[in-house]
Image (cartoon, rainbow, N blue to C red):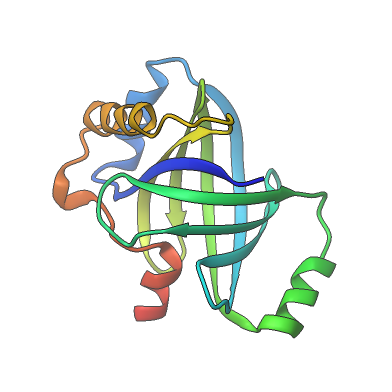
Length: 171
């Protein structure tokens, strides 16, 4: 079942300091994940397999390419590590791009924080306010994203318009 996220990605001005700032709020630390996101060709939205030591999932999502917080409709299927889903999608859809990153993951309630070091791109912060209820409150999610952007010192010019995959394809 699809769920709603409001999320933003931003270039980190000082990843370590910004992460330490978040830690002052006592978030739940999930761990450091070495992730490979393989994106596949699709007619609509984005389709990827995430393979990591913490998170493994098949993810389809649709969102606008705008800077700042934006709504995203997500279908997420978590699974135990298995190369077969990637192999099937590679054969049927073809690989668009592969993104490799080191990601430290935290949660505060329904808000997920990523402190990313992306191979070939640099250091970034991503915040996702997640709502899986039957009646999502997009305004509440937006408010949460805006709050944490201000708390972490994110400026308008730091926000990314595109995904890591789009940025890698352009570089």
